[in-house]
Image (cartoon, rainbow, N blue to C red; front, side):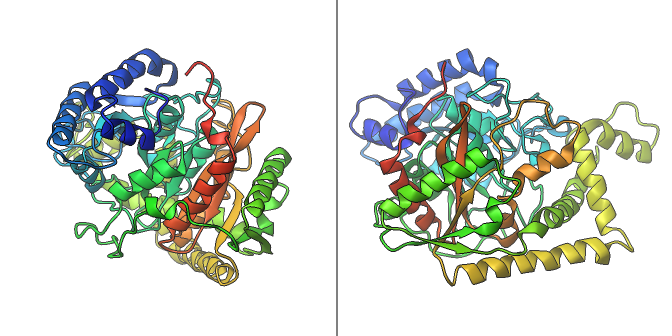
Length: 483
């Protein structure tokens, strides 16, 4: 049962081949047996999961249907979940139990999804390797000595290891797409505003976006259907109709114009990954797609712009964690200043502290115009590049990451080297565009992903291209040995 995709589970439940409770118990047993190798979960909610599974079975017995009714999944541990620890991978929130459900959690629960627990993540979603978590690094099931990518690495590792069929993630600079690429999954970052951020603990508010991680585009379509939609509680949520993503999957891509940015294939890209990308392009050409070289001239400025904007927003968002209202509080403070200083110094890890300091500096008097304002201007130029490109092409294709997964600890002494792993993904966040990563092959036994980008609210187009590609390739069906 653990090998079934979300779509296969939906069909099996509808055909009464098994119950949600039976499936849930199988997966909970796998988590108990295998997750100690991976460290992909922070909290396993066994009692809640069984109760939700029984409720889903009762709803089906009463005649209710639905693709997610009784389907098991897990949430990245920054989605507030009522009565369940929501830690954000940090000591700061190790003792925090959310008093309410995030909109994403509530919508999926209403659809009948069964939550098996909360997955491990980089602390406050800051990282590209899932090594900054207070609960320890997550391991890549394809090679336990390697990282699974971050910050949604716990969700990615759990799905890749067949501990569950799908999970939620968030993407601020590539944190769904990059771990999807490094663990052989399909991961989708929707258009900014497509999925509600209410109840999602913020890292960088103008960049964060929730989305699905699964093995196939078909599964991502099912999960996104349950997550997406306008939310009046989120001021950045956009009131745009949500199409039937599953109905769009099988459309022809004959004549689809795919752009290959020349900037994606420079010196920083592993040539073995470049070769796999070109093989993927050939498969899409066989399906009728038309390939065209394009240019995104301001891409070279994306990383410096991102690492000014994101830390600036983080320094503001994380100011609420002061040891007073909730979360970690230092012991025996001498006075209020000591309480603030020691609670934050002891509660936040090194990477979070680094980004808070960078962000506070960029926003400080005398530096705001020189750094933050300039970064926002670059952001607009990057968006303009995409808008110009989408006048000529329907989809942009390239690598998701410049390299396969690296060994745990290999980049710990060089944060910039880890930041550079996001070079192909962060532009979508800066522009607010939807992006998808899909499996495209292996380099020395480690998975590689292809990234697709589309105009605003064209998630259905991305899922369509990925689904058609997955109908003629089998990369997405391959599982790591031992899982």
